[in-house]
Length: 282
Image (cartoon, rainbow, N blue to C red; front, side, top):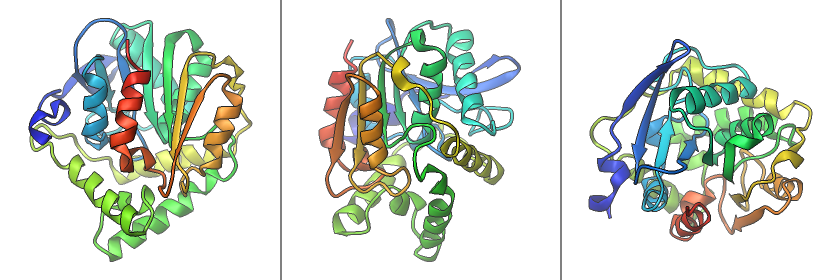
């Protein structure tokens, strides 16, 4: 499958400058029409998207992945609030790329940014995928700092990738899925992105903590088709918050994968990828 992976072998790094900030991004799939813009998770860069999911969507859609301000090869400083990150994304999409309508695929912190973006600019987004995420003010989102640092510690002493602990259960199935996921992220050998800095990572964590401690957003403005997905044992953004989103976003679809954690959509990529691709079909 690697030989046919467009995200691994194509989608070269590009940059554009808007508002004095250089944004790094990649494009994949057929050009034309409304693009699907991917909003990535905490500490992630262009190299943190699962190629199996990106490729499935890029079969029929123009896909754009990008680095938030201050992350990877994008310049500037990481914003200290999710609201500002949403404003930066809006600038990148509308003023940088020149689009007035997009679809969004988001995961974790990316889903928080996507929600803030849609609440502020509801006419910009046509379809929305929210995976492994929760609403502003969602219960226990602010505990992500402790969970994250604990799992990083566990990964260091076991010489593993932190995502194996943060995204997956520690049973046999979860361990196998975690290692497979990390291996897929390493398939791209050339033109790789720059890793996030420690300072930028800490700023993002604090922004998520503030998001979790903020007043609830009015998600009734999200009326576009919305697909919500998670594992049933998400320790980073509690799975119950996906059900909360489902209740608050009228007409949304909810998928909860069994025996899986924060990275449930990656553990079950063979099931989820075609569902997401069908949902986002033009």
